[in-house]
Length: 295
Image (cartoon, rainbow, N blue to C red; front, top):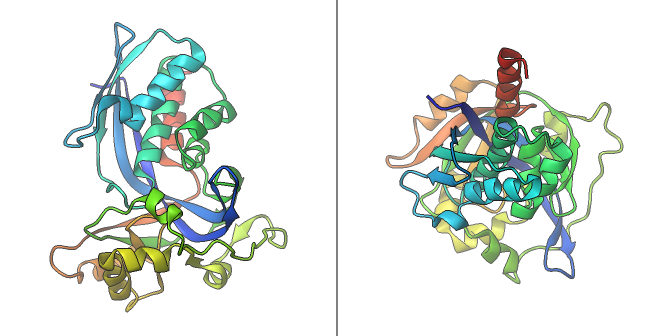
């Protein structure tokens, strides 16, 4: 039995605006990260030595390029921890899907090993480490559905209405770097503000007004499978691209509605239905473990 099992949840970008490009090449953006109750799972086992090993299943990623390994190694370097761990990944989220799979895996690794190795880093410190691994890692470390600015690391927790999301997974992997480097990408969207919102609650009417993804036209021109998936889903509800990845999604009030539509998808198409959550399932699991162990 593993010493600790934690989920690594998916996210959706309910909207994404690209405001400009910084001198360092990163893009200024505004987005809304919606966490989901579906994702990968990581199993952690303590080792008697200080080595870090990763079983990534069928994923053909060199160990030192694997975000799980890099997160664990970075935590060792930051804290001087001499503990080791074997980490097994149960992969449910697609690569290049724009739903945060690798970033979420890295964040769950930081959270899990911070607990097992008793590093005692705060969420702020873990989020700073996570930023070194990728712009999306901090939102998973902090574990709240959030409004994001900057390059995605300036986070403000928000409350969204409970919705169920049908996510379609086209048969392609979208390169984030290629999308952000393409000169055709929109980079001059007008910023919007949270200032007028009461209690930082975003209702579906507000989201419908500001929904959209500046990367969507470019991604659909480069990857026809993405356009086909969105146009099919658009028959049933407003459908959008998430992040810079391949996945497209639509929101529904009831899970059974989303599931019935997924059942109608053309043969060979993949997808899943998940509920939006305010708190990361990884955080909820860690709280439960802490209560059991008295940590």
